Length: 277
Image 1 (cartoon, rainbow, N blue to C red):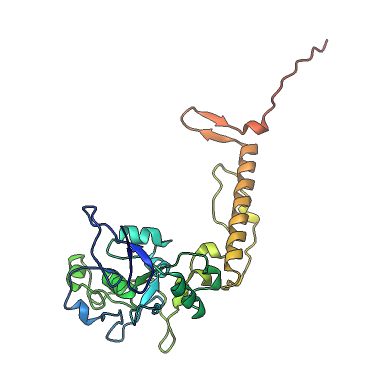
Image 2: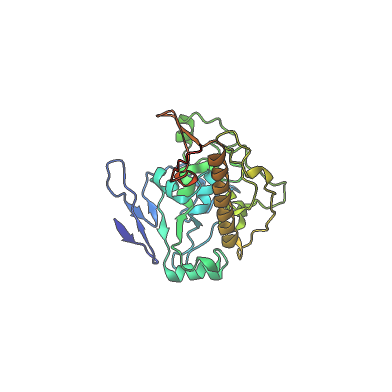
């Protein structure tokens, strides 16, 4: 079910466990309120008590002071490669597609690059992300203390005061947290970096990857798409090279028949017998 949002844009209401569209209000799925959790975040998504989000937040044209995040950024922060599974597995989050006016306003404010002008841009309210992930979306977040639902966190066996993400790199005092690490055009995903592949050959060969040298590329909002395409093209070439070598050396073992398969193109198509007296 598609629905228009106040201030423009459109979205699809997530379904509940029974397959029915959930109730939507102010670009969020309506959920039961938590009195304790509501003291940690206000209606616009502003965190209380000195807490800060690990992702960038911003307002959207026509939507007042409510804070939003680009849907890909909290997804990467939590550990998803893209936002599709992020929303599929967390049905209390609502992906909102901004309209063209809102998109070009985000471009002018340098929240998204100009190269995104032809794309559908999805955003999600910061408050709904905090409700869903609590301490995991807070800089230096600690379980229960920084969780929206303390009762739910305790039921999950969380230890009060324990770091929600011990692997997160926290800056020293006085230095701002690096939110750009979750921004695609700043190199949030390893696919945007041109670097040595780590794929191992399947059948004993050394493979072509060993001789590849690392190439250091500075990723910017102007070249990230080009470097992404180059990296993908280079990786495809390396795969084809490795497969040709493996096929030429040993073929590919087919376990169901016990036969070593080789490409038909590498085999003769004619056989000639010649009598030698």
